[in-house]
Image (cartoon, rainbow, N blue to C red; front, side, top):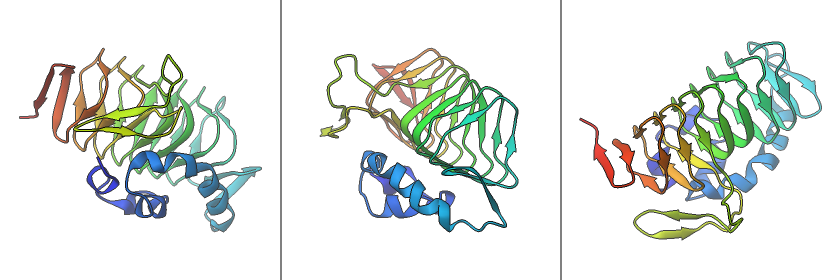
Length: 218
């Protein structure tokens, strides 16, 4: 699925230029770090505070004690970063997001209104506006054989990336304790049942119940 099919409102991320300059979402992943490093110094200082080297937080961010943030990272307005969150850098988080307790982020983009509130791992991944990951759900970003990730949809797409987690389109929702295999893509309004191991592409507006049971939402 292309950027234009997954992310319907690019005003919901400061990374909009990256998505306009590319066709497929995995093409954005290697460019996140450089983009955050270039954007950070341009942010208005009356709105964003530079906490340390290459870490910019909007002054309305609610940062709880015990969270760790490494640069380069930008966190947008009205976002909560809860205790025990581990942000490892190359991160762009939008407005009104929740980064929950014991959630780990690395090389990722979270559009506005994304919730990763409890024990989530989001590495080398992109989460569209209003996407949500249930407690304990993770984006697995490296294959067991360490080979490059291939996206399996209507055709096989060679990404050239060894580390590639998941792409969630706008309003996609992942059930608790599910694993999104490397290269998984959820279309807008797609759902994944709890305790699932989702692989490949889940079409927009469909529910992933099992690999052989992907059905339209009613």
